[in-house]
Length: 424
Image (cartoon, rainbow, N blue to C red; front, top):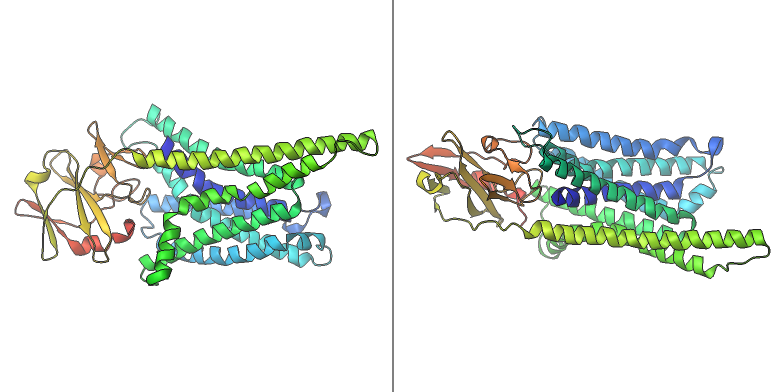
């Protein structure tokens, strides 16, 4: 349950906050006075969600086995849209107040926002939606307590992100405008940095880009602190939260007449409440992600790697070493310096399940054995032994091997080609 929660929350947070901020800054007019482009942002959000669902289905069915070919142009477009959205956020008031003089500017801003929201949603929700494929273990009933707990964790993660965005939105009329603009600009900048980090990492794994020295160290630092950038997307709203509380207390509770006094007191209550609840939401998101991720990553501990023979580019593991029906873990240093792990387990019927100690869905979190089951450390899903060695879902990433002279032989070139599944 916790594993699903800490994956769903960060995945949903950026799309929810981005859609909310662009909506607050670009929404203008009522009824017939609203611009023709008023619904483009909603269409972008729905298009990104639908695209992520379709792409995840194609990945699950192994119709698309290399998501990098799709994510590369998506990230390039997202980075370009992020840069434009920063400019739009900073010019939002001028764009909306002069919409009758320059309606094309508002339409262009809504179009860019719609594209940016769509691409951000598409990229962010792929792994979130992919969790749905691991709720039910193959061969088990879909109505088990484990499945319900995983679904609950997933739903709570999505709900937390949407609720945080809704709470921050209450400050649209209580915080001073520059404070909300500053938070929105910082939000988009953080999303831009995340997209740049993902783009450069993807280009390096595809051998399109090579970084050395300081640029490489900077990229690694951003990649290793991705969760803190997600938390920062929520914490930036401390600026309008404080501004809202200050504005509430600075406004005198009386006025020229009783009606104005009531209006002042009502605004004061709204401003303080909006700011206070926003601070609570920020603390909640921060604690949920820091404590939740720490708990998920803390246990269980993976078993130490076992020794094996490695000669002339061939790793050899004798049957006698792995024929006890338990999980055996091995470690290998790839030609590019990446430390990789792979696992072997003898399945029912005598076949061997062999694959990386990593999967397409949960990355290099690894697997562990508990009560006779092989369980993914990150999403807590028990893997069907019969499916180990095949693509799909939360199964270990398979690779080619051969059987010869009572041993399993693995050519290291097969492992080198899959080093991108592990962090360097």
